[in-house]
Length: 72
Length: 489
Image (cartoon, each protein chain N blue to C red):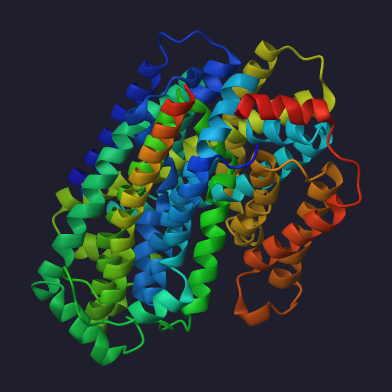
């Protein structure tokens, strides 16, 4: 029932996503300028974390698919 | 206003027809009715999940929050990312256990994993208790959206009754498959509505977003950073994001949707692409900020906003053509109905299968349970509509602790999927301790350490109690552990 090798790798992806919204990072992003894509920086940062999440999860998907292939 | 009313109700009729037709070739069974025959592919599962997740709050609350409180609204983006990251771990395991061990609901898993029928009944009961106020909130949101988008031509009570007759029809006839196909349509119009107004509003009022930020920095300097105008700071955003992210999949209707995916691959693909839907929230937030800037420079505009949650729709109706108000109203109604229909179906499922059958009538046949669940669909909807119309504030207290409450299921679910050591006694006492902590902080004036969210504190207490109590209470039998291990291998 524990984590597989692939899941342990994926855990790091999840940790990175969580870290992006924790106080030390939010503290750095907590500003209005520069205004990027028409929105204040903190809103841009929150929005940027969304595609970053998708990229990390895509990597996770590849890792798990590869692991499934090896187990077959 | 005739145009906007025609668009809103035309859309409602189309979705009802699609929802009814979706179930026409489907044999009636518990699995088909409650979990769509476990047959949803990537696309249908995506739109189902997206439409269920983004509720009336996405249309009314996001803009209202940005308008009145400020930048702490970024928590809504943050918790989405955390929730989808978590889903990549728990989703595939939930789906595999569901399909192999024939689970239909969240308490099925918890009762089986911890060898306790009564724990399942308790979790189902708590799930319904927290789902009803959430349903009531959606109903009231739907009514408000139609009332505002029609410029007051339709009262919110009438709008609620018409909307929920439509929802009951397709949920009753087609179950989750009906919800799935209507959610596909709902997701399209929500997407259209949410994205388009984000561009239209700032352009109409200020010629673009740059002026919005300039004005807000001048008249409300705290509005665009943390802590914002409401005093909500970085620790608040971080702890709420974490608690909502972890609790997100614990809502019974969202958890159960995972059983509808036809394979683990579908779940994993969705964990990858679902986050992108939350980008549509940014335009709504921009609309809220635009309204705040407009209200700051134009007192007559500010005077029209009676409640923060109504800001976007009031501004829309007063300043834009009725055609646009109709589409946005239809989008808001779609968001509310898609979430409500999932809540109605899941609450009926929990009551029929986990409270009545598992708790009191174990000899009841599955087909009878499915029929009972279907009969409960209109009953629970009427109950929630009546509460919304006649006692709108009665369930507010429950709603306030709803998210914190369902998040207390997290240790039972997470440890149940990944660990052998938690015991039944540990999980039960942890759950009770977590719920008690939430109630003590929220309603009894017990101070929360470091201003952390009460659900977060409850979760820490919950985990600690599970660990301590599990260390000296009887373990789960090896046969159950072996069964789960072999299923998850």
